[in-house]
Every structure is written in structure tokens, then in C-alpha cells.
Length: 284
Image (cartoon, rainbow, N blue to C red; front, side, top):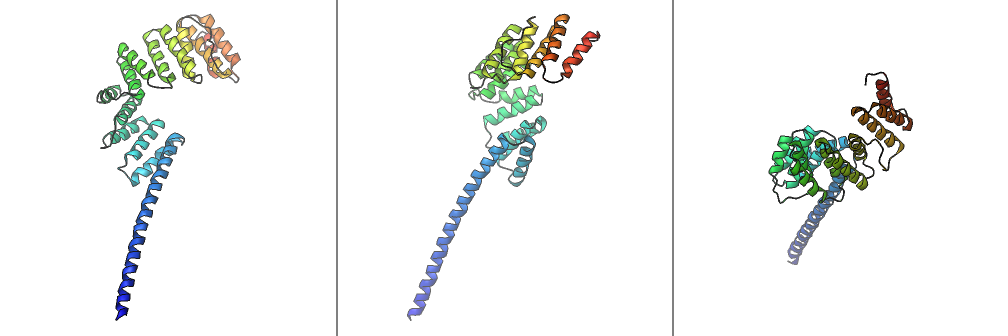
């Protein structure tokens, strides 16, 4: 009579062991899923930061096809499209991100930037107007300044640029933008100061160096400023100064600067040579 009892006990033991193994199995599955999420997040970051933009776009497009509602993948695609210079597609991608229930004000600011890259200033302004004024970030004020520039609202632009500079540890690009804004308004002296500040903050920012000599040339100052520059950069800056001189009617000075640019460049400087020949033939 004891055998059935033993059988029952054995069956119960097997059931308990099976349940225990199933519980452990579930825990393992959950742990593996967590690891996969971490690994995927790391891969997403790598694709965004160091991958070729076209490869990153393809990666996120494939990822979204398998999981279309994940906002992190949607953001990754939108950012990758921006990096790839595909502004029209980026607008569509950011529109989808901002329509997601988990969208943030930072996403809406990114949408505004996509509109600006797409040269749609009206929509960019509309998107930024919808962002609460309490959302104060460098990107938000940088874009607000650019929109104000497009509207020629100079006082607002100056205020936004100044605020943006105070919100970043890398102000050179916004200083350069502010300087260009000043230059387009005819304030070459104010522009020169901002371009010089940009170069001091980022000696590798060639755009600011070139804009600096443009601002000096606009004032009739054709001497290169003291700044860090490679031989090729120096030739490019001399070329810019030469064209500025010609534009102001100082043709003889312009020719001299163009000739110096040709001699300074480590390789053949096609643009400077063509400009010099055009001036010498009287067609420039």
C-alpha cells in the first residue's frame, strides 16, 4: 500500500522541480533580455556617434522595421538622417518622433532644427513657439537666435545668442553664427570681435577664421590677424582677403594678396590662379 504514496510523492517532487526549473528559466530569459537591451543601446550609441551616416540610417531603418513603436530607434533614425544631410527625410522622421506619446521638448527642438536645415523658417518658428519657455537649453536658444535673424529681429537675436553662449562649454559655433549675423547687418567691427572670440575658443574652427578676415576686409583692413593656421589655411585666408579687397575697389591690393595666396599654398591653388588671371585680363 505504500507504493502508490511513493509514486505520488515522486510525481509531486518532479512537478516541484519542473516549476523550479521553469522559474529559473524565466529569470534567465529576463536577464538575457536585459543584456540584449543594454548591448543594443550601446550599439545604437556607436552607430550615432562614430558610424558612417548612411550606414547609421540603414541600421535604424532595419531596427524600426522590426520594432516600429520604439521611440529610441525613431530618434536614432531622425538623428542619422540629419547627420547624412537628408533634411527633408529628417523632418518626416522627427514629425513621427514628436507624435509619439513619449516625445519630449528636446525632440520638438530637434524637429525645429530639421525645418531650419530644410530652409523652412516659418515652420521652425511655429515649432519653437510651442515649446514651453521653461525649457531652456543651448540648442533651443541657438535655434531661436537663428530664427530671429531670419526675421531680422536683431535685438531678439542678440539676446538669444547671448543666452545660448551662457548655456554651453563650447561656444565657438554660436559665436561664429552671431558674428555672421552682425556682418550681414553691416556691423563689421562687432562681427570681427565675435569671430576672434570664436577662434580663441576653438582654434580649429576654420569657418570662424575665414569669417574673421572677411570682417577685417569689409573694414579695409587687409592684414592677416595673428591666429593659428596651417600653410594651406593661410593661403585660403589670403585668398579671402584678396577677394574682399577687389570687392571694395582696392584692385591692386587684391591682386597682391591673390598672388601671395598662390605662392603660400603648398599645392596648386586653382581658385586663386583663376581669380588672378581674370583680374589681369580685365574680366574680373
